[in-house]
Length: 286
Image 1 (cartoon, helix red, strand yellow):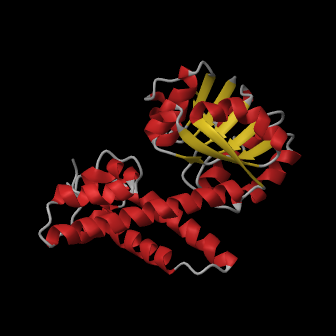
Image 2 (cartoon, one colour):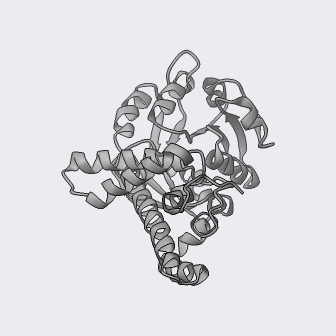
């Protein structure tokens, strides 16, 4: 299939590599063109509208809701060439965005699927991620050959539900990572062997193995999930929970901790939440 990818950051880049390896015809656009060119994948174009014009399926994988809006709308925006295409919004940009955007795509003669992805860069490249898909079943059916390239597809129902589930997942990820960093520091301070402490923690939460360099060794690169993005996701999540009337004091405290760490370590991997527990806090690099 002919696929356009709007946004070639770490996850968008991994998707481009996966789709090209699977035999799809990939066109890329990124706000910083050289970043898309550096992937060495597909064809790189200058505007979102140009990327969409030759595609059947369009994936958006951008930083936040404002980036999504600026990419879709405007003189060279993707919406200008939308007719007949299926748009797959995979950005982590809030649970309300789909309901804002979907009517505009339908009015332009396009179809809209909300499909955030749960998994690491490696999971995307290996086709072992989980994709939450919300929206019209026929539109999801059209998008399925692309979504299934990334891993298991779970249909979640109404628009907004997939984005909400992704925020729940990222709340769990950030909360457990923060607790692990605290317990690693506390256990080590109590005289326990650092490797033994981490072995216990990661046995209970195996995904923490991906953050061992930060939590144990205080090395926060390479960046697979920037700490600043963890703050953004926690802000979106707490906004969702507050509007629903849910009481989430642990999540609020987690957000406060990440905001504090981001003042000095926002550009580093989210494992840099551990800087809060260093005796002389600073953001170490590899």
